[in-house]
Image (tube, rainbow, N blue to C red; front, side, top):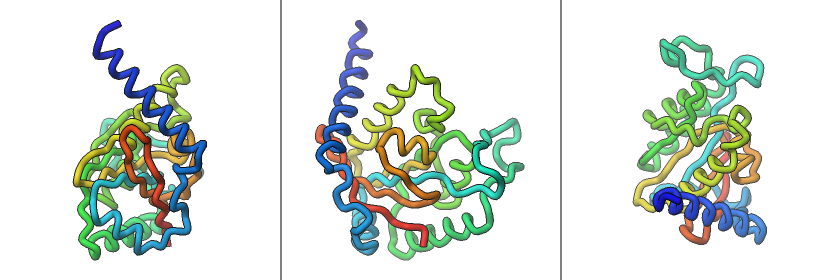
Length: 202
């Protein structure tokens, strides 16, 4: 087997095992929803954390996740007015606390891109975090392992923010989240990760 492929398989497997062990022992939920919001904002302000959130809610029926067309996402009806106001409040909160945005990754779906654009101002598409409901089952495990790898091994003074889908978060982390709810994670390298807590919409 090619050495590069062997290395990728090994690191992905290690990340998946670490995450499963973390969930089994409860460490993936340490902090939980009971952690005070001020503590979570302060930790985010220190940098080096991972922030995961599902895209904001849509004005129409759920179930359709529009991808960018020839004209991009500009002409599409993406987010409701209420959801935009929630995102703006979160953005203002981050600005008032002088929280640096850092690197932002988003699904290719338009609502994710729009959510990231309003909240963070910029984002880089990453196919690994596209909607897991529309992923080839043969690739699902590989994508899940790659996401866990990215979360566990984030090593930077900047924060990493990931804007994706409720189903993708549930499949990878076993956590149900509301639209635009923020999940703050401490990357632990070989030990996986630790969920510090959640920041709600309100």
